[in-house]
Length: 295
Ligand SMILES: [Zn+2]
Ligand SMILES: [Zn+2]
Image 1 (cartoon, rainbow, N blue to C red):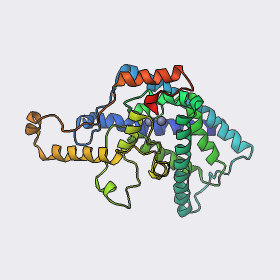
Image 2 (image 1 turned 135 degrees about the vertical axis):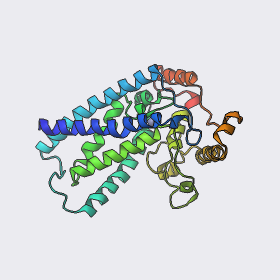
Image 3 (image 1 turned 90 degrees about the vertical axis):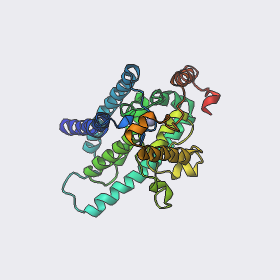
Image 4 (image 1 turned 60 degrees about the vertical axis):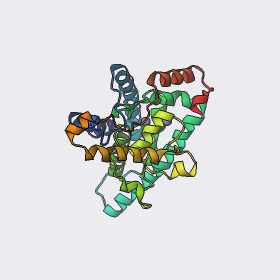
């Protein structure tokens, strides 16, 4: 039992290091955060933000540790239908992964919306929103209550007859999508949002705008939930195409010309970080009262 709990915890930790922090350092090393071609806005990486995010991530992994133990207890008590043996059908393996992603898409939207609309939950969710300009360090930066809401999903899924590998694959998917959403980079090609077959996807700009404006863009992978609930930011696509236009202009100019060129014609307007934090703090000190700016 201890072995399984430890393995589950280590898989969660390793996944986070490999799929969230490692790509962030790699992209920073490649100077991609300075590139006008894909950058939404320069991420603010300072010690204060970093300390906040690291503390939130430790909260989350403490919760993950508890849920890893709970998973073993669940299995021991026969309250789980997880398969650990050989994968009998690859088709079923991928179909069940897709099913869990669709299920999580709904679970995330509903819980995220509730965390914004129910004041007693909102005060916990504001921990994540203190990262006004998020980085991948913010991906798991949660108050423990929010971490419980997110990670109990895995224990719920363990009730279903799916292979343990499905949980790992889904976790990897969730990490990659979350990391992309907190990168401040939008490298998605324009064609995605020009085609009716692919425009139901969320671009990285989508979650960036959620961190900027709070009251829009609650969905995680696909856009239909925000569409159905009319919670999309009205300028999601406009902002996305403006970033792409800036990228196209930047591509046309040679590096030397770029130096003497006027500043980028358009930058995503960033809310003033201090003003935003003041609003967040006011909201924490007056639970139950959402300032007009958040409505
Ligand atoms: Zn976020
Ligand atoms: Zn939120």
